[in-house]
Length: 165
Image 1 (tube, rainbow, N blue to C red):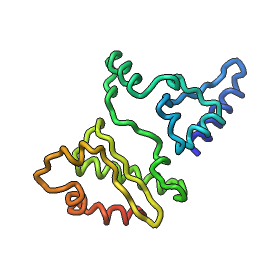
Image 2 (cartoon, helix red, strand yellow):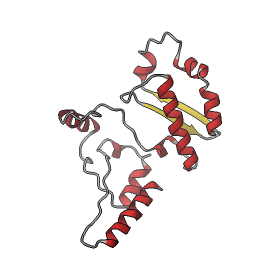
Image 3 (cartoon, rainbow, N blue to C red):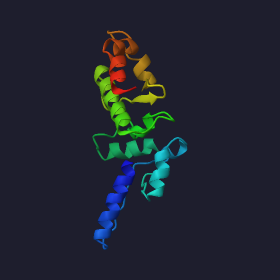
């Protein structure tokens, strides 16, 4: 896994220079700990990854980031790609790349910026599911038809098939 590779590199670095200790950090917050499907949290714990935001919520993180004038304070959450694979779908490099490419394609076709929540999930049986915020689906007045129609016209089904969905 990526976490394992980072941990191994950090360990090698620490072994070369005994005076320095390597610490790994993540952005896990209090809201994340309420989701039992976050298997990455177990991995992070087993590799002693530190979570400095663990006691504050996503909203509090955003408020602090806005206060600090960070340009990404209101970007959509971006959990690891592994979370886009349904239970039972193997986490291969090709699957993760396919999900990433599918999300990029949907974002481009729908002209969504970084603040819009979007997920393409790889389901069993070589199927894909696109998830968007309700506001994006129902409040968006599109002159080019429904989101589903637009994705079909833009060849999203064939695109996903080519990616191995």
